[in-house]
Image (tube, rainbow, N blue to C red):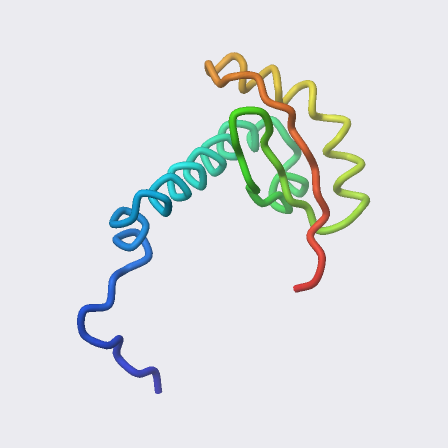
Length: 103
């Protein structure tokens, strides 16, 4: 049986909003998720389902994948993904692909 949260416990969203550094982190998290949502429809559904949004900054965006095969296939699609992001007015960024390790 799960215990109720202690009184005065903040949700993750509230904690992110309450701290300036964490607020910027939350903004970057949302930006990464938005980029993934924008490009995922361009990819085959089985490939898109395996992607996870990773870190994003002014110069780069990282996509996280489960294995080398997905990484290799995704790398072939990077020009198409960059073109889509440019169409949507996103600033140019290098898209990096990183393999998730561990579980």
